[in-house]
Amino acid sequence: MSVAQAIERKIRDAIPVVHVTVENESHRHNVPANSETHFKLTVVSESFAGKMPVRRHQAIYAVLSEELAGPVHALALHLFTPEEWNARDGEVAASPDCRGGSKHDPEFSR
Image (cartoon, rainbow, N blue to C red; front, side, top):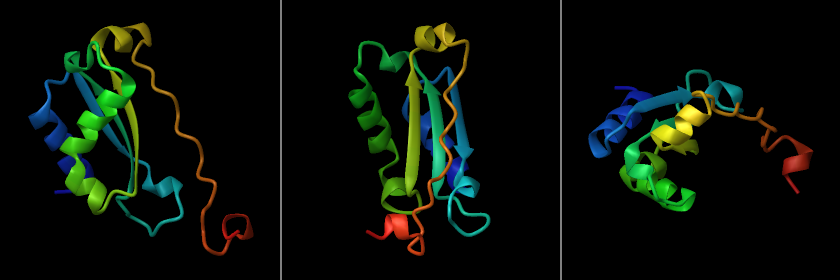
């Protein structure tokens, strides 16, 4: 099972979801080909109602603690209630391009 599939399965098993997508964005970063290290996770759940964003994030971090301690280097979270999701027409902000971070890039080795 891929890391992305494991993430989706764990989320679906842990909370009632209306919508969930896991996007592997590793190819947009300075990592080897076919890596599974950088993800964008969008979850729509009624369980987020009345919770501040930090509480929503903490709930996801708890579910994915193994992945975050292991193969996942970066996880962009987009967490909505069904009402918030509908108000956005199902749109999620695009992830920014990678700024490098390579140890060979002088800007990042200061």
